[in-house]
Image (cartoon, rainbow, N blue to C red):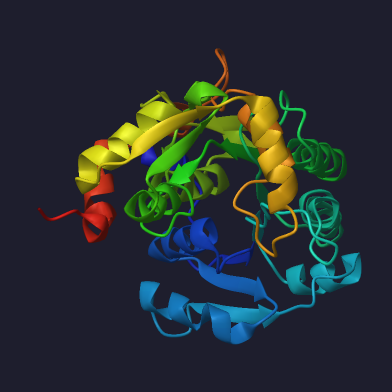
Length: 315
């Protein structure tokens, strides 16, 4: 893949949904480095102010939206050359439900992209949504299908668990390891993951926008490390010096615990997440990957020390 075959993003107006989140902010930063003019659609414009540090004055602007109807999202897209959807939620709530965010949003965005003649649309989904039986996965897969139906040239990216300085996965368990006598190994900790670096996901979005050949395709994004839950815990211990026990919890007990946790405003684990954990989160054989986008995946050991140092145990 030669540089000349890539479409330039310089001065292109790229509208990003979910641009203030962990993955979205990395995507915005990468787009700005590529010279794009970025519009970040958000409920709270002030939440996007921190993104200004990644580019030149006026290169990123916040576009307010209430995110309730197809019209709301269409109005935010009007005037865009390209669109990226990074929205997603981990908990299914009445006001911010899986079906609304994971299914309605990509459906409405794809319709608006077609209506306004948007040149490129990249949609971030999640790995294993075509195999998992969780409501999270079902809603994500439904959103993918509607996006493809309404905008056939959409590029869909399915990242595995994403790690990086602001992640809610590695950081979460490192925090727990500091205060708990043991960490839970749901189902024996045998579930497999292929964690992918947030910087690589951001690069994948930019490459997907730049590469005409990526249109209408699905890419599965995973890093070079395939680890079980137990091995991920050990990697956290390795890079923090923390020592914490691990206890195996059968799936049926995990579901009972999740049932009682459900009364909390933000439960640490849900029944739907237990269902997700029962499907390995790894790239399938034969799938298009980061390498097909010209990206060499980053190993976890090259990144974890940078942000796990704050958890480091000093004897």
